[in-house]
Length: 139
Image 1 (cartoon, one colour):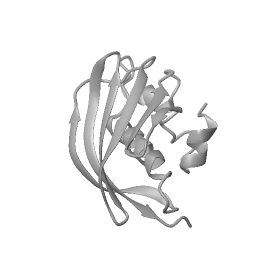
Image 2 (cartoon, helix red, strand yellow; image 1 turned 45 degrees about the horizontal axis):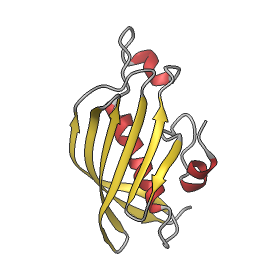
Image 3 (cartoon, rainbow, N blue to C red; image 1 turned 120 degrees about the horizontal axis):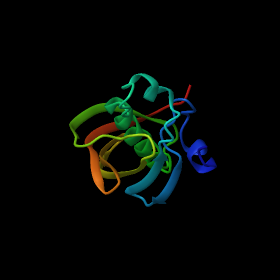
């Protein structure tokens, strides 16, 4: 179950919430975690007998972490991804893994935030990604 600070920061909810808790947060960096229990629906079909978390959902975990970082900005709204840059999948995320998700704000221009993210588990890098997000008005 996600802790309240996560739920207060972004609008995503189960089953599309990929951040459980905030470990550390500063003005330009954030560290969150997600525990993969093995009971997540995506493991049933990706891939039976050798389940791994889909890469697109790993990216989403980084994006949600970036949105939590953006939520502490003076501007109010929802952080949405507007551009995805360099993305490297280096290992797999499997049931039982504790994902460490770290995002760093590299630059902010008006309402655009340029970020880089990294996800690790068991001491191994799983994902590296750069992305851009913008704060949009909530409807």
